[in-house]
Image 1 (cartoon, rainbow, N blue to C red):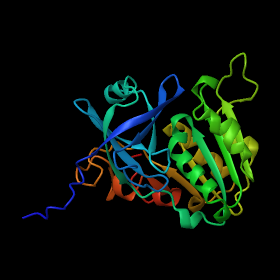
Image 2 (cartoon, helix red, strand yellow; image 1 turned 30 degrees about the horizontal axis):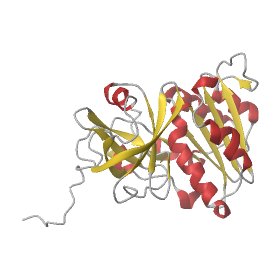
Image 3 (cartoon, rainbow, N blue to C red; image 1 turned 45 degrees about the horizontal axis):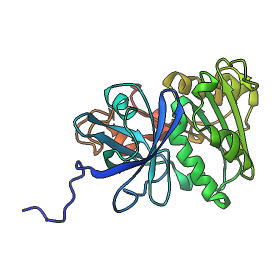
Image 4 (cartoon, helix red, strand yellow; image 1 turned 90 degrees about the vertical axis):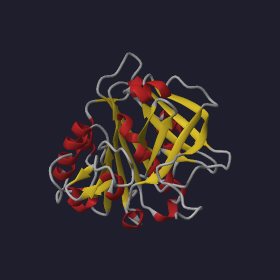
Length: 276
């Protein structure tokens, strides 16, 4: 007979949306809490299963957190996300987690950190950026390189142009594939922008997340700049169904993205089947 206090990991907590931020025309950030406060306390890079009753459930990165809430930035790409983009503040939702391994915080201590994001890929990286800002004394210089298709597609604009540039020893460089009439910044793809900026690998860890094609070429750019596989960290977005390593939807060989990932070093990825 099961212990009455045993928690079923597949049953979500019931929460509610307390704030919605429209980041871009197809990305919104949802602030979620419960009657007891923050649903759980994730480490940077971990994931949450987010659900709407009678619509569905999916895994999303946790992009930041406060004392009483979690933040999830969600791009409108399908049935569940379309429905989420229609809800209003006060909407009841399901949330369970945290899942995954998070970023290697101890390995990064004392090192300079290079964050490279593209589009919605800045969401999981933002959790680590905010963590290192909160624990500023544990990490070296911070350098954020971010790009999107257009100025309208840039996420977290307040962070990019107001908050992060004010942080001590924090540099922010932004590019868009193609600007508009008001854009005064850099134009060009992220990998080429990284090579142009030329970060030095000595004493630095590079963290990247974005569209798979961007990650592919960013990894090549970092290798050109002299970064070793152990210095490069990325996240995978394999389709995850259960979140607890039972359904087999997200396995890479013997590894499960929901348990052993989503964060991996490039050295780890090179030991896995080439399925990502």
